[in-house]
Length: 122
Picture 1 (tube, rainbow, N blue to C red):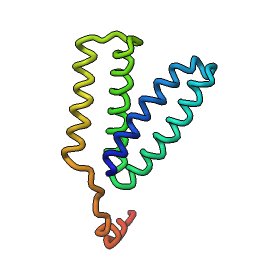
Picture 2 (picture 1 turned 180 degrees about the vertical axis):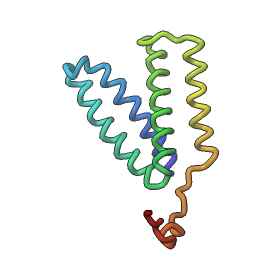
Picture 3 (picture 1 turned 135 degrees about the vertical axis):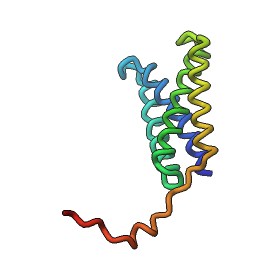
């Protein structure tokens, strides 16, 4: 379930990033409201996912997926041109996200660290 929440969070990142661009410097109230709500939800869901997935992995997946979705949306809506290279690089981001998901994302067992004495300073 944390991975599903993480991908929802990444989708919300794409929403707030798109709304930020549409806000025209925070002069369009509707876009500003969407930005604020999506940002809060995105951060909250990222925080939940990071309780179950290591933060380094969660953040990499969140930013990569959110960025890829933001660019894909911009290309689909015509706000940004679609080129072969952009699609190739977006596919690379997606491949990296899939790779991070496939290799896991379990938290390290830190119980052994509590038993080790602290290193002595010289």
